[in-house]
Amino acid sequence: MLKLLADENFDNTIVRRLLRRRSSIDIVRVQDVGLLGEDDPTILAWSAQEGRILLTHDVATITHFAYERVAQGLSMPGVIEVGTNAQIGQVIEDILLIIDCCSEGELEGQIQYLPF
Image (cartoon, rainbow, N blue to C red; front, side):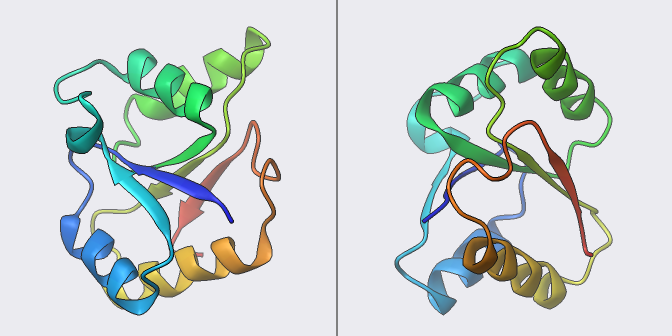
């Protein structure tokens, strides 16, 4: 199963509803792993070290740093960018679809944009 990391400003409502729908989802928040206030490259490095796909609303900077890691030949397990105006129900369905249809490592070097 895919492992996820929710960025510092990721909507906690989405995290809670994902866990309510499927309690077996392996998801942690940046706040829970001691990365609160860390910069994007540090969060992406930790995500890579732990093999976790990053969930974020930060389309402004994360994308740049994620692709920079790929260009440098560094691991980047994947990023899921969620629009801030997206309907929560649709985002949850899309994330569950990704979890159900992707195997570990399949999103390596990729950024997915939600909603689909």
